[in-house]
Structure formats: C-alpha cells, structure tokens
Image 1 (cartoon, helix red, strand yellow):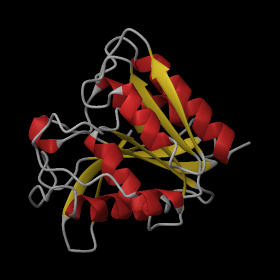
Image 2 (image 1 turned 30 degrees about the vertical axis):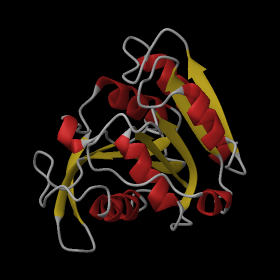
Image 3 (image 1 turned 180 degrees about the vertical axis):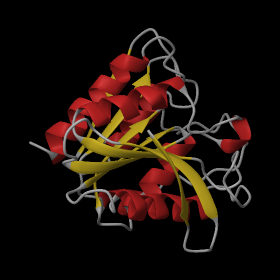
Length: 216
C-alpha cells in the first residue's frame, strides 16, 4: 500500500492510498466513500474489502478522502466539488497503468461517482452500493440524475443493496435501475445500508462484475 497526495483542478491537495496487484496491473479503479458529515472516509471495512478484491483481480486501486475529510484539504461541498475530487482521482490512478478505469462508490460516494461517470468517458464501468434514493435523510447530497441523464449512460452499472436499507428501499431502487440502459441490481438479504458481516460477499460480487465487464 502506498500513501499518496494528489491535486484537484481547483487546487486542493487530497490524501489517498494506492493498492497495486501482485502482478502487472491490467486496469485501474477508484473507490468513493460515504457521506463526510456522517463520518464517511476511505477507512471502512467494506471499502477495504472492495479495494483488496479489485487488486486481487488485477486492478491498480486508489482509495481517497474527499475534500475536507481527515487529511484532505478544503471543505465539504454537498457533492458538487466532490465530483472534481473523483475526476482528480481518476487522473491520478490512470498514471499507474493503461486500460479502462472502474469506479465504485458506497452511498454518497456512489452518487458522486455516478455524477462523474455521466461526463467522463474514461470511466468504463460503475458499481454503486447502497445508492440513496429515499428522502429520509436531510443531509446535503447530489440530486439523483434525471431520466434523460441516466438514459445517456451506456456503460455497465452494478447496483448492490441490502434488502433492509432504509436509504435505498428496494422497490424505489428497482425503478431507478430500470432507467439505465445497461444496469443490473443485486439485493443482499439479511443486511442493510452498512452490509455488516457481508463485506466480503459484496466485494466479491463487485470484483466479479469489474473483471467481467472490463477485463474479459
């Protein structure tokens, strides 16, 4: 694991870590963490599990902290400035290897990752875990993209959700997923937004999807 710093287009220095595979990297990946105002950072068990799984499958993986989180400069910007953070992370990790870039995000991180993918054709596939569709939270976050926006996103997208996730009720999420041209949904039973004790299963599914869509 290598600790790094990299800079956004608006001049902020962000902290991150790069995990390289044991052999040659065949592609790159970026992981986006949950809401900063809820204690979100790159250091969550499920994000560690996803990072390790992607590296095992041949990805150079960058995990990082959004602006204003821990050692990253700046302040929380409600999911707007954070899109620049994802773009800077994609810039940085693509310096490690050629090939496609995979982006995975959990909760708020998934919303920001989706916003970046809508405008960045370097993103070859997305995995969105616990994607918030419910209005039960009043914390600032990006809007869910409209029907026309998601219809324009042709890359493969995987949604994973716990069946008891209060922020992502399965019926509402299914309706959203149906708007995407190339998306699939996996519902994990007996768990919720945090995927407690299911981290490795979720990571394995995301790794399988990443490898199958970008490296097969």
